[in-house]
Length: 495
Image 1 (tube, rainbow, N blue to C red):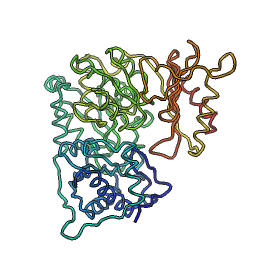
Image 2 (cartoon, rainbow, N blue to C red):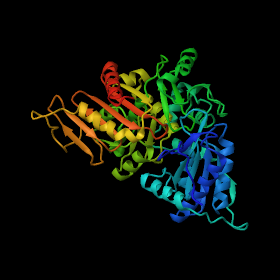
Image 3 (spheres, helix red, strand yellow):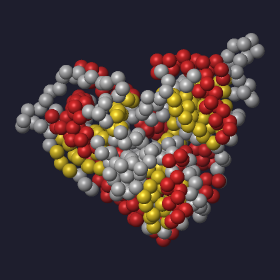
Image 4 (cartoon, helix red, strand yellow):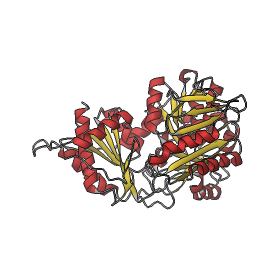
């Protein structure tokens, strides 16, 4: 019979996620996993799925349920246990599996969990693939396997080591020089899935590590999202240990945030900017940078210095990855601390980011603070608020009416036009209006993004794919201007 999705289950290209117990239950997980195995078979992807989870306390229960669902439809399972999400996806891709299933709610609080669905290419299902999966959920009648055709279960406990080896083999990482340099770093794994892998990687790179939250038990001592407000403990560890910089991870280890040697958070967007600089500094790896619509302009500045375009995609790892694939981009990612390197895999990868950040500091001979100060300074403000999704289109119209400059006859000027300041959304849904000092670039490919390139300011309003809220993200050259943009946006929407 069809799978009935609860109304309060968050469904997007970021997976199916919800609070443990309601709406997320073992019964629902089993049904979704069985449907996923059926979907992969119908897509012609084969019958082996790689399964992994983060450290959440609900992880064992839901992993058992997912494994049962897959096996029940004749899908074999390779179980990796507690591993970073990028480790899971890399292992599935390299093994030629039909797909991968991650039991993880990424940066959400401990009471949440989720399923993340990926294909055999190691990429999460994109909007088109997810659409086909959703249609299957509406009509599927599982063909349960007979006793002699059930899927087989095997274990893979070496995936983390293989992932580390792949990073150490990258031509961008000078392992011997890093070992001689012996960086002293502080590390906060927030009791997530990175507690084994990232200290091991840092050891291989010759680092001295002062750690916290290395136990992978899912008992998050703070909000697990690695935003500046949540990094006070890491800042204190940097100062007390004398570390040169600090690394903070999220529970499934696809996001990396930085703290400088003074114990101050650097901002998640700088992770991608500094890593991209390492990649683009090699003549043989020059190419476009791809990032999402909510990422800082500092990534555009790095791309501009390298003489390459910065291309924009809708928020969501798979959207960035697909555009990187289409454009042949060597590097990309998201401003939430997610770094993607095509030479490794098209997946956000925090351990990769750790190696590239250390390489950047090695090559420049700079401290993290000095490396950041080299680039223009922007202030980015991110807020969220409840807002009825059925009214969001009316909200966008109100935002446009308030911000769009008017022509002399009172009409909106200029429908259609070029992109802004070397960046392009690539979605064919961009307008430009206004005069030289009032230029407004409108992008509707993911919510509504309003940019004023002459002022180096933008505002992005979009429904979250991971929480039942609307997000307001703004950036400007001063915090006051960014806060004013967010406040004005919230006022217009009444959020």
